[in-house]
Length: 484
View 1 (cartoon, rainbow, N blue to C red):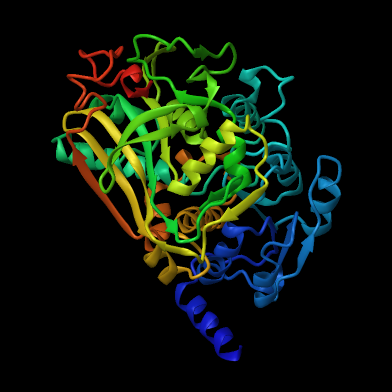
View 2 (view 1 turned 90 degrees about the horizontal axis):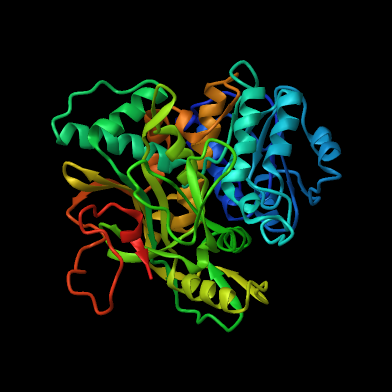
């Protein structure tokens, strides 16, 4: 044990980046919470004795004990969270929220009033919201929750405590991949440009490059030799989180080039109207996509915060009219066991699975390929992102799989950025310095690379087996990506 402690201290001395003398409260200690601990100690001067973990169950307790971190099993509820958080925080402290089913906006409001810096990896609500059939579909969407966030950002602008919202892998790192990819495409298509510094400059660059559609293209190939049992949900990351978002309506950022809203599509009647939703869950909606290692594939159109925030961030206005906005969608092919689990979940009419199993130490091969796919520009398609194998992940952080480490890299990078940038108010991933965040995260992301492709969603569909409703003149219409 003594040798292990000495090694940790040496690594921390070599890699410390961000000073912090306050206390850090961590909510949740699942796979991401357990994985982020060594990175926090390596890249900041946070120490175990100045940390406290509050969580809803005993997951992560053994890991916390190894580090000597106080660990409380105290589920947060809408009624008790103010008292619990006051007990464990003081002005100048830090709250890292890695929990599920704890309303993010309530926790952010608390932190703003108490002068506590904040980071989370996704926007959450209190339990049961996503499956509450008494609520209209538009109110069960991520778009609706983000509109509440937009309003709160106006209440807590720059000059208030920094709160980084939705910063894991995606949402999170994916927004920084996008900015890096735009600069690569500009360079390779002969567009001379200075690195944009503000939102309008980034949006103008995307408009100039004629990017029409952005896909968050992810293929997870991690697999285990343990056979999945009936009524068992198997996944490589938060099962409860996946169950929740899979049953939400499909959502996507809606581009200015789109000619028609799909028959099952609906435009919002409130907010900034940067997105649409479909009258069907993401677990039953497929779209075509592409990654360098996998090639063409069908992915689930799962709702995700970044599809909405990216579409908003890269909108170009002239005289208060929208002249450009990209279509943005998440095309997710989870691990094969998770894909089967998802279909069984839908087949059981969204009943909670009897058993849940996280793929972790039993993974024998595979990895996670996660990136942005920019489509429509002069070179047609460009994918840029992380290709992280399970072997690489275990070398970098032994207690995580590839998917978990990608999220963890985004979470710890956001913590460091928040410590380095106090007083920024509430910010989303697109607001952070993409270069700084990627430099922090890249050592944990395996092969970070870009690849051009001539792929379009119409490839190999000139003579379809069955009649299809497609737009031959414009391959980047959303109807061409849909799988019917």
